[in-house]
Length: 116
Image (cartoon, rainbow, N blue to C red):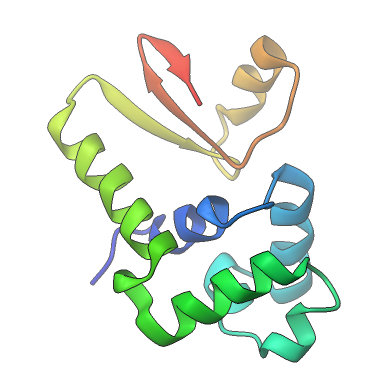
């Protein structure tokens, strides 16, 4: 079983997925996991070709895909840094951090100061 934020990190790690596209996909499909399971023909109307190919790669290889591997590396890094915390857009503290950075992002990786 994956970390609760695994699929969010995968979606975030796809090429050309910024905060606006991330939020739009999650709003349309209900969750990052659901967005990642949509048909490529449906996704091609919402994302560019490179992103659609990366999603196809994830759908066929899952954690062995490029985005899947990057998300696993992120999660592994978090387990080895006890002073690091993953702040998700759905977390109540997220808005506080947005004020500091003036730009909404799906996630912040935090170590004393915030690293994106």
